[in-house]
Each structure stands twice: as structure tokens, then as C-alpha cells.
Length: 206
Image (tube, rainbow, N blue to C red):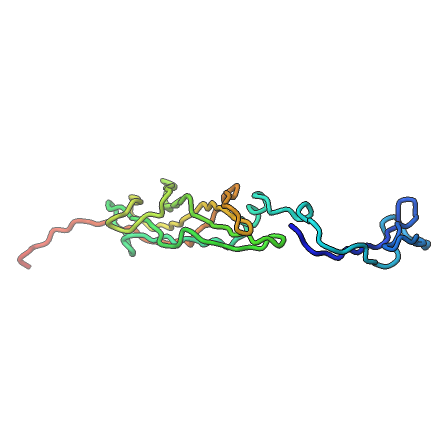
């Protein structure tokens, strides 16, 4: 990376309590009470021109991008369930999410334009009962193309969805590279009742 810079310097007190030369090469007197590292004298122009600053400001590393990735406002996916109201014991409850499962972010890291493409890689459905979790790699679909379902006994349940996100990134339009790690988000909880159906004899002539 090449940039046009104006370099300035200011004399500092050395360990032997003398001062480094000023920009014009003149010695600077050190007054009483100053310690090593204290500035003395004035700033002066040392050089100017185009300089290769690649080593001073290297491109963001994958690990540095990952630290930014962990702080992104990734979406929290909403759990949808069918039937949308109360469930019925003996009939499975269908889960899915129709929230976006990809999102693109552009961040500035030390002057570099970094584009991060986040993708939902794993879905952990917390069912809210003692059976625990359902882990999938797809967001599910509504009936009749559903792929995720769970049987409940009668009762009241609260379910929510944890999403594991991975990502790729580019730096100033470079080829994509993998972000070395994942992060998770928890969606809002949904509460529903599962009812118990009972048979009842009726007189069809009434």
C-alpha cells in the first residue's frame, strides 16, 4: 500500500538524559526535572513523499475479521409453528422459520473495506419440553412440505431457535476467504398450548 505522507518528529529525552537530535539535526538541551521518554523541543518536518506502508498497516487477518464478525448485529430468526395457535396431543407440531438466513455487512477495518457474507449453517430448535433439542441444517418449511416436527403431551410450552452463523469475507474486493469461526444468535421465544382431545358420544338424532 502506497500513500503520500508528511513525516514529522519531536526530540525525546534519552536514557542518558540527553535529547535526540531535532528534525534539522540540532542538539536539544534537556531541562531539569525531565525523565527519559519526555518530549523536548518542537515538532519538525523530517521527510515527505510517497511511502510503502504495507508493513505498517497490513490487510486485516482472518482472526481480526472474526473479532468483527462476532460483534455484527446478526438477525435473530423467528420460530414459526403449525398449527399457529394451540396444538393437539397426538398430532406433531411443525417448526420452521421464514426469516432471512443470509446477510451481508460492510465494515471498515483500519481503512480497508471488508465485506462479510454471513450464512446460517445450523438450526437448533429448543422444543421447551424434556426431550431437549432438534438440530438441523435447514430452516424447515410449512405444511405440507415440512421437514421439522415434534410430538408433545398436553401442556404449555415455550420454544425458540438458536442459529449458528458462519461467514466468508473479502478485503477491498479480494477473492472470498472463510471467516475462521462461528457465532450464534437466539431468536425470540414463542409460547403455545397443546390440548388433549377426548372422545364424546353424541346422539345423532338430537
